[in-house]
Image 1 (tube, each protein chain N blue to C red):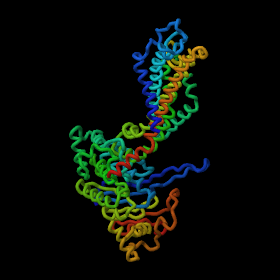
Image 2: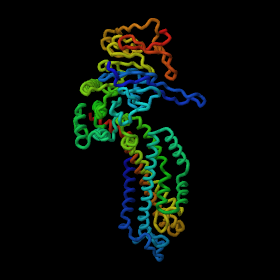
Image 3: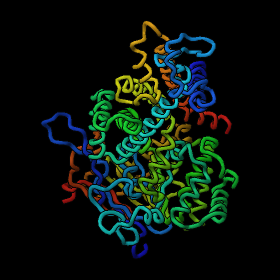
Image 4: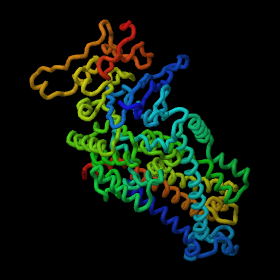
Length: 321
Length: 278
């Protein structure tokens, strides 16, 4: 591990006020993200997995500065990205960029691809005129499109091509971090593989660090260095992908892995999950996944406990004492 | 649907051409060619639409009146559209207190009959073309504002807007380059319909004598003049009335047609075409 991580999410919480159910009741809040702490090291791919609504996309938006955190800090190389001392929207654009889930909604239908990409270069005074055109052409080639696609409009592309354009847009400003918000979930399986290969190739070539948001463990397994499993706004298990997949410990992680369709298991009519790592005796996992937690209620006391090298799992506090 | 659009476009084109080429088309001067000897002549070969009580050629006055009516309609609607779009887009984009304020203002504007409001403004500013433009331009932006706001609300959470934000573009830049181009369609429709109602409002105000002052011909004040001649020379009222009717109908049909052409999920239609090709 390096001295200072590239990106550090420190105790991040995002709460949304819910509309009042009645005039006299106090306003309730939805705890979309509750005390999440994560780190991303240089050149690493950190995956955040969980079911929809668990707060993984909100975490991504907070990293991007598109969602102001209620509490918590986000640090880039030790410098704050939110709150006092935060860089301007323009400066921050050079640090992190995002690839969005829906390739159809992520491109402005009225602007040609070339114009969209060149506008970014112009805004940041990176290149003008023919130099800008060259850089756009180079970027389109890099993501597997052809330079003459620049004059086309988004509706002229297929889903996979649009996602390539989305990646080109995210890379145009040469950011250090790419936040990938379910970049594959809207694509066909055959195209998913192409995009994942492209992403891995780009990561290696451009020395990028990825935060990959996904609900699909089979995708995450191939690309990530570390995995954080989120459940109802909190990280319930975190660790290197090997140790998480080899010894999935939190019941929710086990359930997630169990739900991935596995051809061999289906054919042999039995399914085996790898064993869980041992946890301190008498400890209870938190939250209790046998019933649905109330996202409005404050979380019960719990903490992430180290159960292996860099492998942590959330346990209820009272069970440990 | 198509027919309506074409018919509306034809009507509007005829009126616009008539207004532009009024000096060439008009057989007489609309003001100077008054001749009491030939007053209240019924339509014939010389005066195709007859003459009014001062012996002025009704056709010439209708043609010149089209200039005033269209100018008032178009310019006041441009003012309306600009105000409505600016308020609506910024309210939808920023939300919060500004949104509450704009919403309140819009509701107040919708609650006041716009013609009465325009009348009040005219009473303060006095009659004449500039005050007419101001009065009509400030009173009819609420629908534009509402549509702009609701369209912006649905657009601002689209990921291309988020992408522009994370690329570092400023809020005003995003409103101008990402949101405005995507709501031009509906704004155009409302604008077209608005021109029709502005023409009508101009006629009403001029009819009441606080719009365009005589002798400058406008369809509204021609109707005022012709009111007393309704029995003796009905043509002096019928033709300006028909002109108003045709213009308003034309703009309404044009607006409806535009809406039908632009509205039915144009983006999905284009998207499907793109997907089918790929």
